[in-house]
Length: 285
Image 1 (cartoon, rainbow, N blue to C red):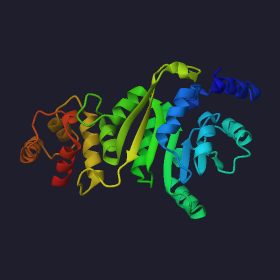
Image 2 (cartoon, helix red, strand yellow; image 1 turned 90 degrees about the vertical axis):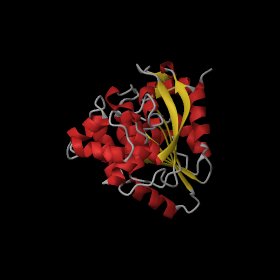
Image 3 (cartoon, one colour; image 1 turned 135 degrees about the horizontal axis):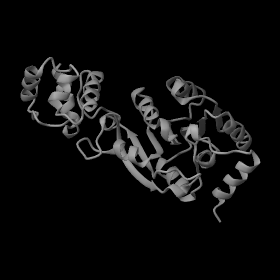
């Protein structure tokens, strides 16, 4: 018997709940997937887990058994009522009815560590709402929070782009950002029948292990990411033309001179460069 499936149906009936499509809700019902997420997160009693979008609390239940503290951030007030009831007796459970994109996570983590000196590691674990996956991931990385890892289930197509090595087929602008901040792992592909209601897409669990030191030497990382963003705005063009058109290079002649000095081909496309290549261009300025 699938206990998670039966629990999910019971809770949905008890609280008269349906998945909110506008919030990208699909309820996970696979015991195998839940166990894999928890195991790959390598949770210990000295860990603070921040779970984003816990929904009915399917994953939360298992996180609470392993972690020192679990803080759930849930936007849907209906889900918050369920979570309060379900985990009322758990002393290591805390709930925030907020939009994670508006939460000062750095402040939240600092305050929690001050209250609880036993907390050694901060980890993000979540089944993320697919419609705002990228903004959430970028917030977690760009704010340079004191995280050890981020283990999330997201849409497979997005996951493949996030965890690609720069220069691979799936490379996008975000690939370079993730690669700069973290070392990624491909954990598990998740079929759509692992949820109710079934989403139209396949999902994937990935883990981002946050780097302790930068992977490239860069003088101004904001400049580097600006160059990458501009390059991928016109990814069908050559890097040279894309950076001329977006005014990174003053003109084509100047751009050719810079690329030749850096030993970067004049006909190379944005997705074919390594992170080190973009760092060289940025450092040139």
